Each structure stands twice: as C-alpha cells, then as structure tokens.
Image (cartoon, rainbow, N blue to C red):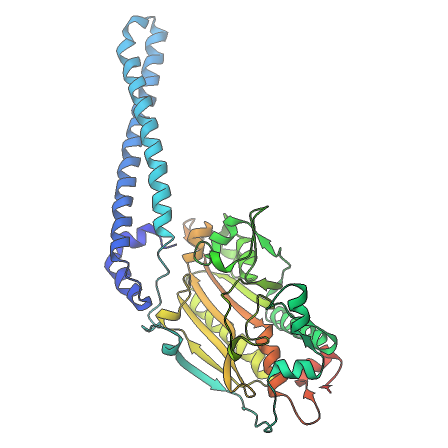
Length: 423
C-alpha cells in the first residue's frame, strides 16, 4: 500500500503518475484523504477526551482522599459522559480504519520514472536482445509433440489425474526438470542467496502482505475448509517470513532463494499460445527475493537482472529483456523487467522471468521496517524475480535444441542430467 503521509504530501504527483497505468484515481485518492482527515480529527478528539477522563479520575481520587466525597458528584457525571462519548469515538475510529484500508487496497503502486505509459504488452519497451536463434529443419516440432515423441511429458495423463494444465513429467523429462531446479538453486546460492524451503500454502494475511489479495483472489486456489491459499509463487511465503518485523539496518540486504511448485487458476483459453507447457495451473519455479534499504534497491534490481541474464547465457538460449509499460505493470510493482526466450519451433517469444522492485509498497502492507543507525524507522524495499520459471525454459530447450539425432542438452546442464542427448 501507499503510505498515507506520501499521498497527503504528494497527491497531485501520485494522481499524475498513476495515469501511466491508465488508473484514474483522482476521485478515489480524494475520498481517501478526506476519510484520513476525518480519522485524524476523530483520533484527536478521542485523545483529548481520554486525557480529560484520566485527569478527572485523578481529581476524583484526590477529593475522596481528602474526605470531601460530597463534592465529586459533578465530576463523576462528567466522567460518565466522557466514557460514553469516548466509546462512540473509538467505534467510529474503528469503522473509519476499516474503510481506509479498503480504499488503500484499491490503489496500485506508483510507477518509477523509467516506466512509460501504455495500454498492454504491445507497448512494452525492449531494452536488450541477445543469443543466437537456431535455424531448425522444416520438420521441427513444437515441444508438446517432442514430449510425446520422446515420452518426456504426458499431458493427457495429467488431465486424467487432475485436469488440463497439470502435466506428468516422465523419465528423462522428469530428470531434465529436476536438473533445471538444481542448476537454478546452485546458481542462486553461489550468488549469495540463501536457499529456503517454505510452505506451499499460506494464510490470508500472507496473501494480503505481498499483494496477491485482494487483487488476484480469483487466480489463487483457495482451500476453503482451512481458509488457506495455494501459493502462486514462492515470493509470497519467502517475503512473509518478515511480516510484522523491525529489522536492524546491519541485517540488510537479505537475499533468499526457494524452489516451490506454483498454482494459478488462470482463465482457460484455447490455441497454440496455451498448448503444452505454455500455460499451466501447476508448474515449478525457483524464485529470488531481496530485502534492501531504499538507497540500495535500484542497484539490487540491476544485480538481479544481471543474474538472470547470466543464467540464460549459460543455457545458450536466445533471449530479450522488456521493460514493462504502465498498462502491463503488476499492481504492486514500481518497475518490472520481463525476460523472454525465443521458441524457434513456435516462432514466438515466451516469458520466463519477471524481475521487479516494489519499493516500500509491500512493506507497508507487511508492516515491515528497519531501524537505521540513528534509531529512525523506515520501510524496507522488497524485490523479487524468477530465476527461473521452468515450464517455458524446458519448452525452449526441447524446441531450440532439437536435431536430427535428438535433443541436445545444454552443456551447463549435463552434470545435472547425467546425459547429453535425448533420443
């Protein structure tokens, strides 16, 4: 959430910046600030009445001690009035706080200056392109056909067991999947990220903390009996480790990595763009998360982008980097870079990673702060990125590395797979 202090002091700047997202929030922000003013006035009135009631109690106590009990009737009557009115003010304040939170949850993060205006992914800015796109034979296959030919992934069996979007990996397909997970984790830990295993279900507070709730409520699987949610990404439990914490500045940065399955109830559609591994309801992903001071967060984002780039260079995959426009930016993000690899067999770019900074937006929801050396408290800046999401990386390897002899495994993965060719 955006801090109320920031909105009070930068209302017009915030309204203008949110236009990049095509978010017309002037009326909402004005309503929010009016409610905030009412909250502050109510709080002031309540504080004054509680102070008066406290002073009256002390005065009544002194009079009783002096033996002049007959003089307290008027004071006791005023004390009763204050008790009743302060209770009403407290109830009003609680209701205002509920309304304030509901309004604040509707306002997305402020985009950074680098973010350009735009409506959709068509308006994203390509900032980099590298890697050699292979030239395949005319009979080259998309990954779902290769998976069937070499008995690597069974999509029909997954549909039988669960439903569409839940594939079954088999034999060398399962081994390649595990190899990618281990390779990503090793790369991340070598770069200073601490490997952390986290729960795959989270409570409602965790969903609100990182911004999946209420924004993406319809995309999350909800276990209604226990009121828990299956995670859409390891970002949620990893970041929520620090919910309601006050860290010391010397503890930062905190860098974590974790492998988890991810679950997403995305609306179903048909066509090649969602075939095979292109869009799943359950998939594996290795995530990186960082907690930084505001002074270091921009450099940290660059380091994360560089890290994902290095992985793709080692995998010898053709890739490009996009800086997302305002219309394609996630609700909680201030700046996001997407990585896409090129699938030659499908003749299209496939998104495989998003690297984002949320600045203090998540921390305000998480009540996550750090104490600086002078004792003052500040919002921690949170960042996260996929390093990497597996389905489309696996699809890219199958499609781009296919030869007449079979599928050649990228050299960096051979120590993890134990084989260099799927045939």
